[in-house]
Image (cartoon, rainbow, N blue to C red):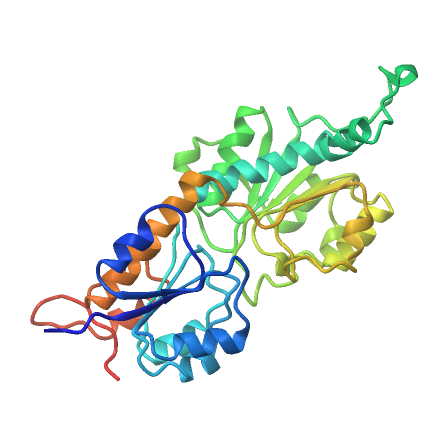
Amino acid sequence: MRQRPRVFVTRSLAGPALARLAEHGDVDVWPEPTALPPAVLASRVAPAEGLLCLLSDRVDAALLARAPHLRAISSLSVGVDHIDLAAATARGVPVGHTPGVLTETTADLAFALLLAAARRVPEADRCVRDGHWRPERVWEPDLLLGRDVSGATLGILGLGAIGRAVARRARGFGMRVLAWSRTPRPLEDLAGGVELVALPELLAQADFVSVHVALAPETRGLLDAETLGAMKPGAILVNTARGGIVDEAALAEALRTGRLAAAGLDVFAHEPLERTSPLLALPNVVLSPHIGSASRATRTRMAELAVDNLLAALAGRRMVACANPEVYDAHERPETGHSRPVSR
């Protein structure tokens, strides 16, 4: 009788997914709501065959070297920049992720940040809470004047699933939508509502720029002092992708000087945002703590897919959503057509 696989889960998950995982393996769950220290993560992963992790867990080559039994990694995220995919592939370890299920929820937040930044909602909230909205200021013609969204031009960096979902929302607001993508993208499903343009043209024309590219060597620091300086004066930046895409010091300076009107940020180069960050002192920045996928329904679906990925790999089947499919493609079993990871 085959021994049940040992699985380590780095945080408790929403919904019934963990109970289902426990039906098929011996599950060890980190009980704290905070992230594990790296040394603790390494010690808990060492005996495991399966790892279910979050994007805050660094799974690098050193960690993999300390986990000789590991056969599968599943991340509760779309992005896998926290995992050394090359090292995992070299070890024959498939890496699962959760694309698709969080598209609409993340697009909702991107548009929420866009609207909040445009209409200065956090500043208005503080005005009321702090007692500055007094009888003599009950209705001032120039109180907290913001920007119209309807009829404005939105520039979308990255026309993947989330970028496309944001484009659909923008059309509902009567916006003109420009997009730039590093890879060719079909536009048929957007019914001609998006214009593909070069990056300089997008930055020069867009009243709002929303970031939806993946973090990669080619996109790290994509919005630096030069590209931020090329944006339309008074434009508003929204980032729900990854913090490393934007040079935060350059962004803070552009916001401080009024070169850009505002920003809505859900992601940061270092998370949590460092208390010394100049962004915290700026009133024209809307900040949220990386909650793009944080609806109850979406997090439950993410957990289900993450568990599906892990169970499939531990049973010798292809993951439902694999971030390094080459780990299978190079090792097909011709007699059955099934896939298996590299044997070690």
